[in-house]
Image 1 (cartoon, rainbow, N blue to C red):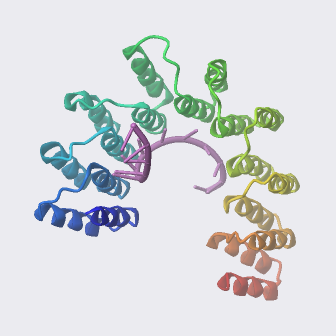
Image 2 (cartoon, rainbow, N blue to C red; image 1 turned 90 degrees about the horizontal axis):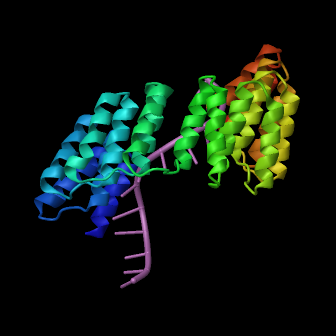
Image 3 (cartoon, chains in turn orange, purple; image 1 turned 180 degrees about the vertical axis):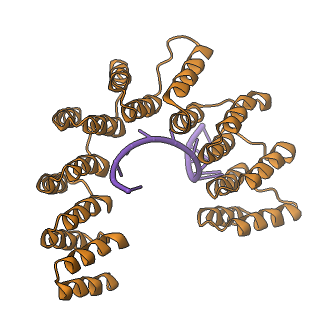
Amino acid sequence: CRECETMIRDFCLEGKLDAALWLRNKLIANGYIPDLVTHNHLVNGFCKAGHLEKADFLVREMLDHGPFPNCVTFNTFIKGYCLKGDMKKALSLFWSMPEHSIRPNKITYNILLHALCKNGSVEDARNFLEEILDDGCEKKPVDIIASTIMMDYCFKNGDTVEALQYWMKMSRQGRRTDVVAYNVLIHGFCLSHDVKLGFSVFGQMLKSGILPDACTCNTFVSHFCKIGRFDEAWNILVSMLSMGVAPDWITPKMIIEGLCVHGDVVKANELLHLMLESSIVPEPRVWNALIHGYGKCGEVDAALWIKDLMVNS
RNA sequence: GGUAGCCUGUUCC
């Protein structure tokens, strides 16, 4: 019945949760119990759709009749409550894990850390982190993702000093910092309007053999668009392309919208075609920005032409 | 003994 389980999984991924649940119930009625991973897909589907009552029902059934939930089940379920902003419930689930003899893993901690930063405060997250570290043996190195989460939210709250402490701890531990950690650091410097530092971090990143990605590019581009330096933003995009970084639709979106607002529709149009050549099709609002941009300076023909282009893309 | 699918961090809005 591997095929039925694959079907349930695909239904979940496509958001067809009713069908997925129906098939699961059907199989059980016929005496076959879908395996744990399949159940986890169902829980995940319900959580992502915000139907936590259904996820809750499913997890209860799993506890009572199997397949017995594992750490992934709880991670998924906890994240569901985090997305709803219900940290009380998320934390109580976390603390209930030992009752079921399920051990939380790094991912569990990171889900909660992230949500505590987002829905609560960095303070709450810091306390939680300390609690976790105290719990086990000493000198446990902090997970790189956990450090990145903390660093990110410290920057976002304007606490640069603490953010950098997380960064230094990370690099001191000799753990391999990755592209996301660098992106967060660069973004942090851009937030405090210190692009120069951002660039020097970027250089450091290249030196340690870590390749930039679309986020790295977008972080710089976003910064330059915000201060109205579209020439610089454009240069970033071009040099990233030459480094082999594949831009996503966010990159052109920022520059095109910015250029249109500032009245340089011609340049925006040029960029649009560049992206279309790389078969990157922008969002509707990017097209709107261009159409509106041409309309604003009275070039109705050009506006209509863009509209045709949009329909054909 | 080998093998598969599920859960965590960064950029625009």
